[in-house]
Image 1 (spheres, rainbow, N blue to C red):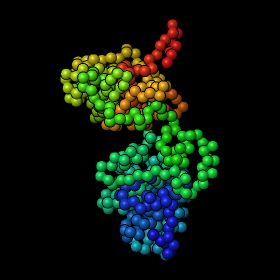
Image 2: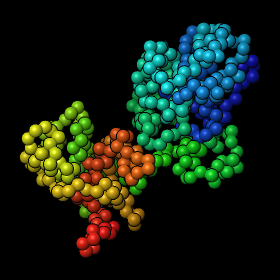
Image 3: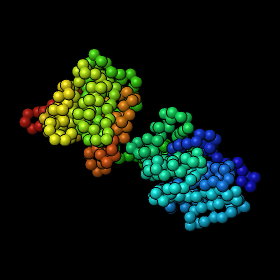
Image 4: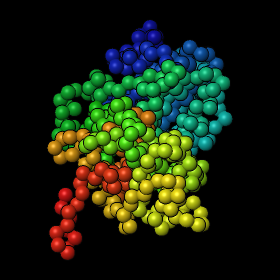
Length: 417
């Protein structure tokens, strides 16, 4: 591709993305990689290849769109190719009838109703997920348009991380992803990167310069690692079924496991939505594992008094009437005890991992990967909406597999771990 007989030059890493023919592409890259330049090259190529069509560049803020991408785009497109240019609307129309428009996603609903043939979402991790799912994706449908997501990471609790994980399992082979560091971009020297390393904490540096998904606000399950995920975490039907239960109304969450010696195998999860009751939950357990299986339920202790399924019996009573053995203390567990027990089960101080989770347990894995503390507190951030599977797992571990059981000294209640 050339402009005025001069080739547009891309670095090696940029070229890997540019030459891919996948319809949907996801690029995670470090600072100063050259993301915005690549975005403009992609849009120009699209506009030249499909005359008369519309292409969007989307950024989180107007300032970002104008101060970065608009300047790059104006330098990139020869004046002789331009039919009209609007500095306020950030819009260029080419002589072939194609238009490239720079859009802001702060008011994504204003973009609804447009039909586009291609889009670049720059710093996509910092956009609301509705921008893609409710606005941009439908706008690409009639033209079967393409999309390029470009961003530095924003932790594992973001929708962008979910998208990144989805690409790895794409069943239709429409997607591809790349991860490149700042150095890979070729625009920043090694000396400058090392200087930045000495001024940033490890997680911030890894996120900003090495394009690593980091949780900068404090991950709760700090012991969790991909090593804890194993397809060998299978049910052993001769053993009792251990069931962690969180009675949240929507979703109601359960974690199914067996304990074989000193190892806990989490092989399934039960996530019920749509206002499911505890009766519905119990029926689902019986449907999956049969009526003859011994089930030891380890629920939220508050379920001994609460009636989330309406008037009548408590949640614990419903489980007992369904034939389950219920094991739970009278008083609620301390949050700190639950977190300590979960982390110890995942990896203890000797470096031993005694808990393995089957890949099908996607909600639990997501919870362990993404649940962080509320900034300025020692409490998990429930606003993220990923705590329910963690809680169900925590109740199970506390009751049946607590490697960090506390001991007390005299009447003081001082706890040793």
